[in-house]
Image 1 (spheres, rainbow, N blue to C red):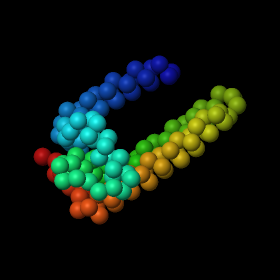
Image 2: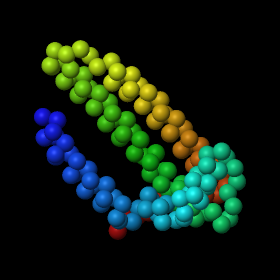
Image 3: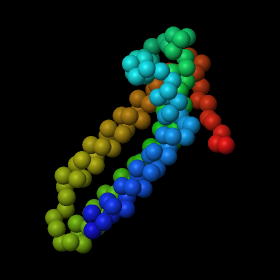
Length: 141
């Protein structure tokens, strides 16, 4: 059953991810916007609430656009995690197996990590907003 579902889900996921990175979007703009070292440096400066130099404005703008998009996707990710946890609990109860406590603990740890990621992302966006870098949403053609 698991193998059959993987044969269906994996090709769809690969198609979706490749489709997302081949058309213009915020993640692609960030990747094209500068060298990986420069991107890491600018993101770290935003997270630490440090001022951004003028020459790094393009990278910071691309990161802010990408981070705002990520913040819009977090509720969907958390909702999907809850559905996955419910399915696992249902399957364990249906198969008369013990409850997977380790999975529940891992789920709680993942929620804490996602909360920290949301917090850091929001801090970076607010730091950029204080410096005059605001989110620019692109219109789809």
